[in-house]
Length: 458
Image (cartoon, rainbow, N blue to C red):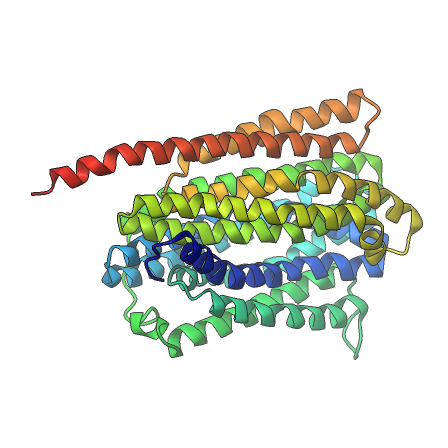
């Protein structure tokens, strides 16, 4: 990364950083996307089972993996402050923490998933698929968490093209093993939905191996000697990572779990509704990779400028990221609105499922703008290391405002299952507004602090 002086230079650097992240995010999400898509081609009951399973899996994994995202602003600020000698220890302690988090999640799912699924009124076949899908996914927990730590390190150095290349390899690998294990081709067992989970686990192990090789052998990563001379566990460094990462993880968990909660609540409407809801959510999540990638780029660039004490540049990157995401959100909304019938038909041949999915996709188009604002604003706030108030705002927006609104509309109006999606729109909008106000407050506060720091220098 380098210092920029004009808005044009900043936009070009933003694109340079974000584009590889976007490709990476899409490629990584394609693992889940093709799990859902290829399972939907196998059967409606398996699709419903994988939907329920992923609704448990995604928020728990993403929430805890979010803790490791703190490595990005930590390393970015170290690089901006010319403290490269501290990067190695930060990354190594992050890897230790990744292993611990993987063990915690494995224990949670291994010991508790059957009890959690038993509380839901699911058809026996759907419940069985959900349980076996999650167990298969846990095989890939360790490589997935460690890869997240390594990826945060790579991205913080501005080498987002490297993670792009690694992630691009994950999609064809996953598709190949899905083909073998879901449908049972070439002598492999026909596992249906659970086969998608096993295919994902195999994919995670392979991309970790690739990432480790690149960091060990390629410049500039090998100059930091990440895999040599491992230190003892450092509670001080863990506290630094956790102090930033835990609020990030909780914030992400709060946001992703709201979608899972809606999936659980829709279970009472039957297998067809769950399947249609998952189709709409799956494709909308794919489009969300765009503002999410801009968010991650904002964290890197804002963190770098804050570390270098260039607060005006950090401010410009923040709002440039928001403006870029908002502009592109209109394109995403148009894709969902005008092509919703074609999108639904890609997933299922069941006309009832397709008809219902088309209606869900219409609501998905409506929350594109809110997503485009709240995601990059959160990314900018993480670059400032302002994460504590953020997760409180997210909690209130999604769980105190969004979910209750959806419940009331679903159960006390004629909207039915669609009421929950209206609640999602309300929650996302509330989050976009409150987080934007928080970013303005932080920038205003720092603007008054910096002159005092400069004037106090001898």
